[in-house]
Length: 92
Image 1 (cartoon, rainbow, N blue to C red):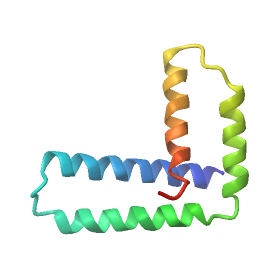
Image 2: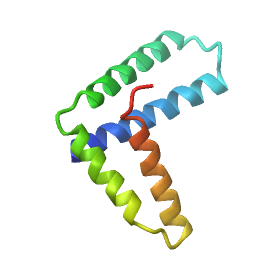
Image 3: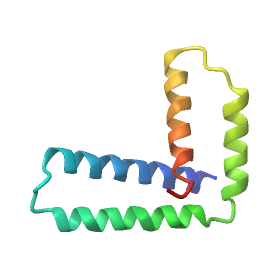
Image 4: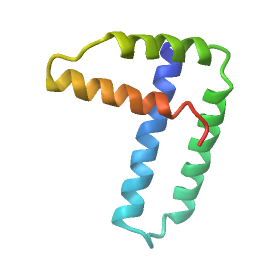
């Protein structure tokens, strides 16, 4: 599960980087590298969608999300972040 989580974190950071670069410099000369990074993130997402442990991992995380009640802002943000990561495992 650690590998799945690490992959989700990497995919999330890559998407944030792509969005930031596109927002700040839409006509930047690094557009080719940006497209390549976008293709790599798509490839990683496909691998996550087809991973053998995906369903069990998703079930365990959803179970944790449904039984855990956040008590402060940090825990609310953590729970929202985990939901965002989990959403990336589903095809768009």
